[in-house]
Length: 241
Image (cartoon, rainbow, N blue to C red; front, side, top):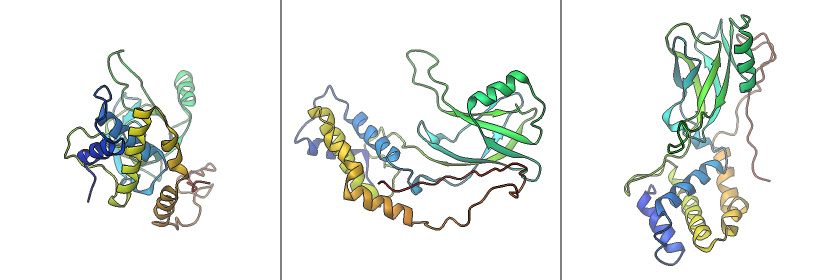
């Protein structure tokens, strides 16, 4: 059965042996525990179906899906017109330099970089991440490129809302919730720090990796479709040592 925010609240209270000091926000503890689970490993179940992103005339960035959140992971951006165009990940400084120089040598190659805009005011939360792109599009184009990514934890606010994790990870999530609660109440993070070394985490990481162990032959290189460069662009995720 899927874990709800109420389940997580109860786990936090139970683990510390009673009511948590009202000066501590139980819901904040629960959501922080959820983010910890997502950040603990590049889980395969965080992968979302490829999604189209739109280009807009004069806009040098594209917005990411809502569930990318603040800790999502960009895996690739592939142009819809693959025979003529490609997109390569770069550092944001390279995009800034290209914009400054206004070079015209990127007709068939887009560059993209993940950026975090930060706060607009001191009383607001940081804005969501986005992809800066170069060159700046000169026309509107729906589904101009396809994004593959790993999603973030989605914050829960209502007691009946369900955590966006597979049910097989319910136990690990509850363990983390309890460890977070103890860390705050007892001001002792040792139990939380032991979770990545636990047999439960090791078992779950191996099961997650085995879900699709064969990723096929290595791709990329000078013969890759649409590519004239050595464009090796893949991610490997190892198990904890």
